[in-house]
Amino acid sequence: MSTPVGTRWFDGVDDHARRRPDAPAISYAGASPKGALPEYTDISFAELSQWSDVLARRFAESGIGRGDRTIVLINPGPELYAVLFGLFKAGAIPVVIDPGMGVRAMLRCLAAVNPQAFVGIPEAHVLRVLFRRSFRRVRVPVTVGRRWFWGGHTLAAFGRGGAAGGEHPVTADDPQPVDVAAPAMIAFTTGSTGPAKAVELTHGNLASMLDRTQALTGTTAGQTALVTLPVFGVLYLLLGTGIVLPPLIPSRVGSTDPAHVADAVTRFGVETLFASPAVLAPLLAYCRERAVRLPTIRAVFSGGAPVPNAVIVGLREILPGDVEIHAGYGATESIPMSSIESRELAAGPAQRAGEGAGTCIGRPVDGIDVRLLAITDDPVRSWADAGEPPDGPGEIVVSGPNVSSRYHWPDEANLLGKIPDGDRVWHRTGDVGWIDDEGRIWFCGRKSQRVELGDHTLHTVQVEQVFNTVSGVARTALVGVGSRPRQRPVLCVELVSDADAGDVLARLRAHGADNELTGAVDTFLVHPGFPVDIRHNAKIGREQLSVWAGKRLDGRRPAGGRLGRWHR
Image (cartoon, rainbow, N blue to C red; front, side):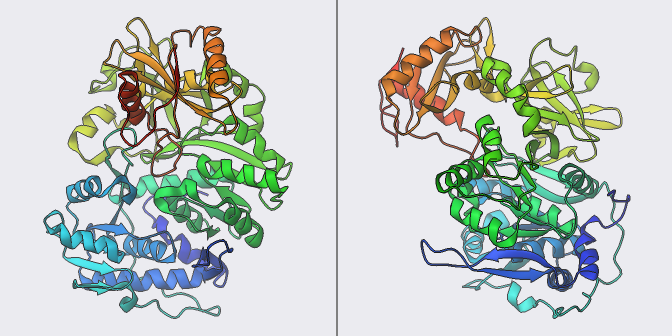
């Protein structure tokens, strides 16, 4: 599949509605008693196409015009996808954000994009009204659900149209070609490893994301995919793949009940599963404990954080022998960037990870160029100023048609995160890694989380993968206490439930001393449960752990947490 330049890439749902009008597009879970399996409702491609057409007209009639930045704060479900496709068709620019980042941070981010319209659930509108100065330019409020004490429209009043029973959906009036360089969406990063940024994605970026997702996943029309990240729901629907939405809380994806995931896979014959490591690990444990098999799955894709090798390899126990299990690498600024399949990972890279090589995240997807930049926190104003590539790990920088070339906000993010290079722009990922002789990328950790010891630098994932092989360890997190360039390396440790802390810490110290990479790490703290990011519930919040470790070493009880046992 290749999307022609200038075409309306977002009309894929309409195309599939004409070919397969009654095919389920979205199967979503409704409310259910605690402990009971949920009931699901379907919406067909014809219904979704008709609904988004109706919304496109109603949005335009209500004053949401081309180029109007429109905040979308809706829980995952059919309303979210109908609204997004309706806004695309109307020429508006959806603005999406993770509400789990906290009210204050979210309000600051949303105010920065100076929105003209606001489509959200009632709770979101309460914030809009209470903090009206942040949304003073909002002309068109639309409530998804019951409207309370504010004005504006409701999504229900806009209607849904009547396509059903094989009727062809109505198409938008006089559809215009898109400008591939024009903004199509603004998506905020979570801010879990740095300040949240508003990523500007053009029509060309999103069309390319669609092409590369299809090429990577091999997904075709008529299949079914279970997704836990809305952007992949959009892409799968455009490919004609029906999506299943199990019960989940967007800000706590890791709390998703694995029984619900296994039930949804079995009930709908799901062939493709896209989920974060925080969903896959409990699903594997659940299926192992109950001897559950998921025979319909043909492909698994995971991303958002490094997937533990044990999870990638272990999934083969519960899935068919010919299944493909991919650990992907991407970012809000670029989806996807690279991928590696489990059989290649198990054939060598998994063992090298435990020796300190980092995590192998595979080869770049088609069209993505990858380079390494010497590690620096300073701006690089042009590629000519980048200097020679580093001998060891460097910052991973990427360029390609699906890579966002600019941030909408803040301005300084463009200075620090982008490198002009003639007619293209390189994106600085903020990740540290290296590239092996086979062209595979190895992820070593976040640049902002590196630990500088004066004479050398430690990268978190490289070090943690060495210690994670020790018996009794659930996972580890390396942090630096103190100021660069002379920090104290501290390893925070989560234990498996039945492990003896004293024994595990002794084994960690002995194991670390045997590896040249980890020999400098001699302080270990047991932590009750690591903080994680809000989007995938998988990226470890090492910044918070660094503060916790500093207080622990100073003899102060960290706020909100118990004192960890420690060993020096």
